[in-house]
Length: 425
Image (cartoon, rainbow, N blue to C red; front, side, top):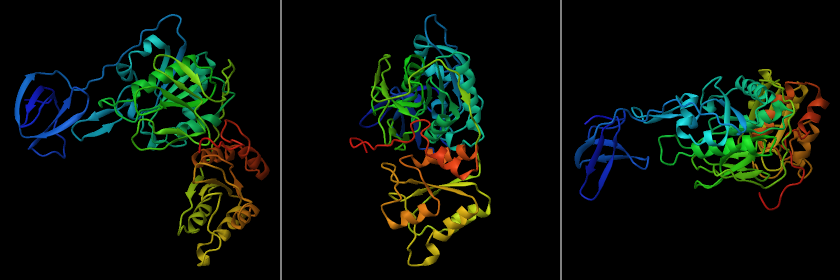
């Protein structure tokens, strides 16, 4: 028997049928792996094996051109890689982001019945963990171009690891946006029976083409089953689980809405409504910005290192209401001198809470007041990742102290909620 053959394996207690997979580099010669009809793979040792038929290929995804139909809203797609556009490498057992953009449509032919796809562009293909500040302006400029040429919305396929980072920066870069820009990914690869990317893509296309929402949003599974997708504001969302299909959850806010694969849309909270206006891609970014996390035994040498290397801004995930070590038993671990030096060197310092839920407040505890008096900016209820990217965007525009404070505390894209919600924390 050869990889790709359909086989039956009968053990002492069970019978399995599926496609014989190539042996992994880590697999010994006593085992075989088959892909079951439900999409999952299983490794087996021993048993009676028989070949049922020969297969010509293993998990080949042909490129599909979606047929354009009259009367459907026109959208464009920007494909950047990630699990939604991946294949399993059976030799290593790992997932590679190798799929051509139009191969994605093999998993979701239903798109042709929902929207008219004007254009698919793929400026690069990387795992989202490899994204840098160089890629963000490219996505923003492509999205603005497509929207200004008249499409109803844009879908951006993207890896999930840093999906919420990209959603945040696009929320600031796409000035004047009043059409949906939907970021979408997959937690499971297309070879798996629990692949979630097809439904996520369908729901994102519905949101881009039909919804009244005029914001950057993430559209992903709203629960573990294939029921509906949540539409989540790009500045109030975070990946909260490594593998669950409903990993993306709203933080310090609510879902903007829910979308069903049937086409139904339910709106659940306030949003910026759709309008046909021009979009400007404001892509200025300061790359010398860092993200630090406060923790027991954190050494202020970290901040001194950044100052010595000419960083312009630092967002610190401070504890609770916005605290750093100040009254330490060993004075060398107090951050007061390092913060003072950084501020004297003109480095912008902002605090967001690592608690995620809630907001920072410098007035409750003495150490908070100390930091505030040194010129630390407290970023309200912004998520650390959002405040980090906003600081980079703001410093791309100005180094003026007053203007930095004004821009950081200005609510551009729903990133600041002035009143915390009791019902969802």
